[in-house]
Image 1 (cartoon, one colour):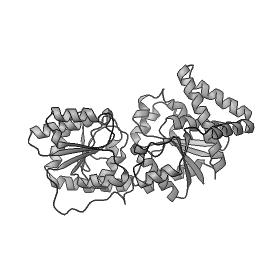
Image 2 (tube, rainbow, N blue to C red; image 1 turned 90 degrees about the vertical axis):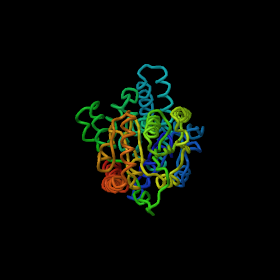
Image 3 (cartoon, rainbow, N blue to C red; image 1 turned 120 degrees about the vertical axis):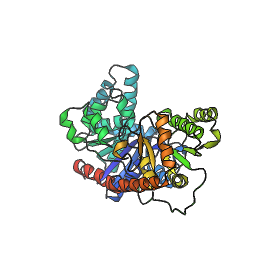
Image 4 (spheres, helix red, strand yellow; image 1 turned 90 degrees about the horizontal axis):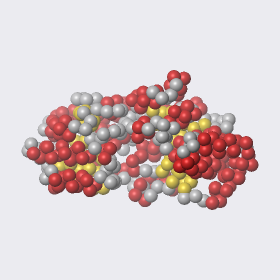
Amino acid sequence: MKVAYLVARYPAVSQTFVVGEVLGLRRHGLDVDTLAIRRSPPEEVLSQADREAFQSTYTVLPPRPWHLVRGHGRALVRDPRGYISTLLHALALGRLDLRAVLWQLFYFGEAMVVWDQCERRGVRHLHVHFPNVAADVAMLVARYGGDGWSYSMTLHGPTELSDVREHRLPEKVRRSAFTICISDYTRSQVMNFVEREHWTRLPVVHCGIDTERFTPFPDDGTRASPPTVLAVGRLDPRKGHSLLVEALGRLAREGTDVRVVIVGEGPERATLERLGRELGVGDRLALPGAVGQDEIGTWFESADVFCMPSLAEGLPVVLMEAMACELPVVAPRLMGIPELVEDGVSGTLVTPGRADELAAALAGQLTDPETRKRMGVAGRERVLAEFEVGECARQVAELMRAVAAP
């Protein structure tokens, strides 16, 4: 059975789980083509898996004039009424907002190119992650395609749930064959804005990781001094890294010898560097930049504790990766995270936005190696039980087989 994954950009550093899911579906017997609205820039293609995905993915933009003419020409000849109806529907989605109408016109233009590619490849079902431009385009493709065509969607949160109207989420959910929610928390939020009859098409399927790739590291009894707290994520205010730097300042004042490494890149770099200097811990803070999946294991191996200080998260894959490596974790008690981390068992949960609680949790783990070991083992067991990519991909494959025609 053939399906296509349509993504805004593919691959992307912050969405490695999509590459893993596609590979998992292929292992479960699905023939998966990948299409992207825009070409990924070089800084997003950092691993061998990313490079292979990049090479095999068809991108709509920058536009190929012949593909644009061919797609629209074939669609108009095949079904003139459907073509005009889909165009009018796209414009209506703009709700008389001139800027939104213009964007919908672009989406319609892209949709006919995607429809043409799917038609040529024998694909009748599209799946998208996130309700962004890819979801708009997929919805238009399925509408124009008519009987036998469908699309589905995976919702993560929290970004897409922060502005339901802007993303036109109710309509996208209603028109989808099914909408996967990555956590029970996400599902509960979607249930808020769609009617009860749609709830049965809101399955919960976790994102998963390759637990054979992320494994515990041998412990030779020697660790680097001082101990290292690791965080991984885009340097963005929503990731809360400034709270971790504040916590580092508190720990230093209390006499705890520790260094913090934040792996990632983004607009918050200068702010974090300045805050580190102001708190007198600039020499204890390292910002090595973004790395690909081929390199991330080295950073997990060098860490003693993994910390996620985010202010908003869905169900973070990097937290699963750290736990699979038997790293004890400290994370905020918000959204889907408590469905992954059991407080006091597989990690420590803290109140979001509280640098003092973050510092106390880190100090508690750093000074208690037996607790770290126990939490690390429990964390890996938790990931193996519910967040292994093969099993997660199998669940997605079953959902697709139920709605997509061979």
